[in-house]
Image (cartoon, rainbow, N blue to C red; front, side, top):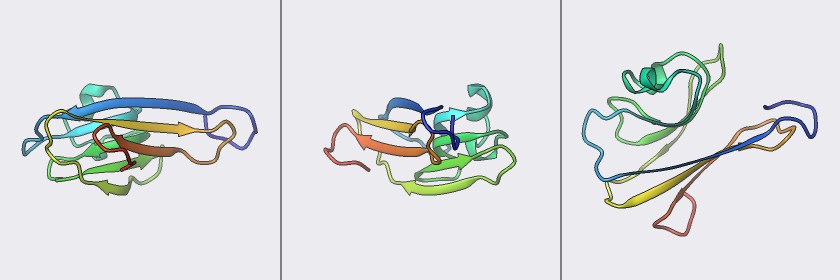
Length: 117
């Protein structure tokens, strides 16, 4: 999916999600993860084994964070994103790589605001 050969691979994923309330003790993961979904939500998303790229929140976190890890690499917490407990607010998470690209791109938009977060 990501590689040095031009015009090969590449992908585009869009996830729409939202919260009415984020209670204390919440774990969240939105994105692509090697593990099945049950293992991601029953423990901290950053502690689960396998490759991942997405937006997540561990048990003690107060903000969502962009998580990135390839197999055999250490987890990278790239950017903390504050998302308030606003009712009826939806978010669009885009994860994509151009064909032959060397990087995976992440974009988060709020449907309530005209700008990217």
